[in-house]
Amino acid sequence: MTPNNYIYLLKEFFYQKMDSDNTLQMRGYMKEQFEFFGIKSPERKEIVKYFLNNLTALKYFYIATAIKKYLCFASCSLYLFLATK
Image (spheres, rainbow, N blue to C red):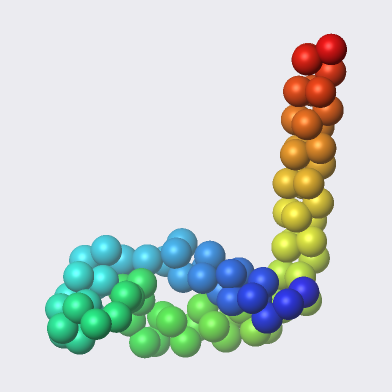
């Protein structure tokens, strides 16, 4: 897995815990210069801690997800190929 894959996975964790009310307040505080997930520091630290502690399991989950997406794409492509014949 590349570093971009890890960043993507961590972003997914943040998106699941996103708080839109806090997001607006945080963006306003920083004068609309940055994007925020609206996660306060203690909770964000817990998410990162969990992420780092479970990195091996996440690798396998990511690989399984990628394989599932590939198989779905392959089966859809095969269906479309056969449907045109």
